[in-house]
Image (tube, rainbow, N blue to C red):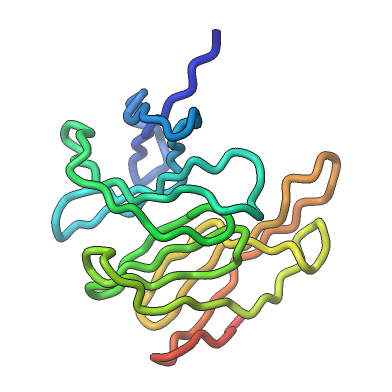
Length: 183
């Protein structure tokens, strides 16, 4: 039998895998396994914040979403935050100042949360320029990361069998109220 689990792999700066920890989180919701998607290590508190969803097959429906806070020394769950759902699944998390930014695939939006995820500060769409396979209307952000006032977004399309994959890394300048496409 095949058993699904959430694993965490650790790499050094040269890209060599130094560790793999298996079966970190095995909880289910409605019979679906909570799946790890992306994480953010917060050097301030020493915890790993992980996007976790029960998304399995359809990005155009709402999926349960939570942020797990893990202690990297033991991989124990310190706390979790349930997020109000949007269409699709959460794909990535990053922090800027005291606020958290979460990328939602399927709804093609980024949500901005306060420091403890208790309120949504804003919801934003990014202007789309890269053309992934599957047509111009299918564009999802798989990863986001801040560098100063610039947000880098890893853009990808659907997983089409035999199709051409054309991902893109786009840059957006945050002007304080909205994103402006840079390249």
